[in-house]
Amino acid sequence: MKKPLYGTLLLMLGFFIAMNPACNAQQEQKLTVVAYNVLLGFRENPTLLEQCVEWLQSEHPDIVSFEELNGFTQQSLSELARRYGHHYSVILKEDGFPVGITSKYPITDVERVVKDMHHGYIYAKVNGYHVFALHLSPHNSNKRHEEIQRILQRAAALPQREPILVMGDFNAVSHADSQRYDTAERLKKALEMESNHDYVFNLRDGKIDYRVTDALAAAGFSDTYALMNEGFTPSFPTKSFQGKDTYYGGPCRIDFIWVNAALADRCTRAEMVSNRYTHEISDHYPVIASFK
Image (cartoon, rainbow, N blue to C red; front, top):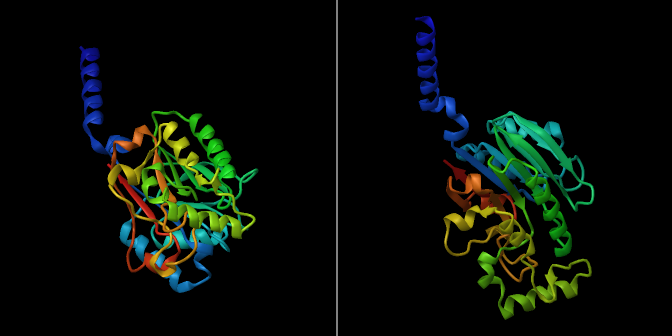
């Protein structure tokens, strides 16, 4: 009689675990992530850093991907992160234009990649999510294409049923916004930018190059902003930097949070956050996305 009773108890326990949300944290847990280029490490301006902390405290993100953490070290990034409730952080490097990740949850399996990259990227696993934090080449579309192919090759080696995020400053634009970019006026300005700067090669055969975002889409990733919004909202430049030259002849959306099929259907929010804080902090607006 003991064996049937024992089996019944096991079945009941299994049913309880299956039905209990606390035991299905990965499946039920909500997630909010931010990608933010903070322009030269807040330009060494404590006021801008304070504004960023206040804004992040109001949003309560689970994961933040920073770009342009100039002047930051692992220690100073950790100190910043703790101020908005993130006790885990990792920085790509401590020179140049580093990216970084901060999180409420442990950051594991960290890979820092700088070889043959203009700035570099971090891959890490955070609470069951695979995260790529990147900052692609700002000046050369061919280099950007090479960089995203390397990142996508790494992503392809991951379990595809698990959630994957690729986020940061891509310095590339999307076909979803092509009506904004593929105009005679825009192309004229973009060509003038290239002719005036001998290090800028962002056009391809005199046209806007969409290969970076096309490669992401072809690999099965979705642009969260395009999933949740109709129309165009630029991420660069911000209100405080209106008139700043861009490589695309005017305001552009170059900051993204891309996700694989395991996350795309769970997206509930995606936006460029434009408010009294983010108008001032940087020349880029942050991108935020939430998932159920």
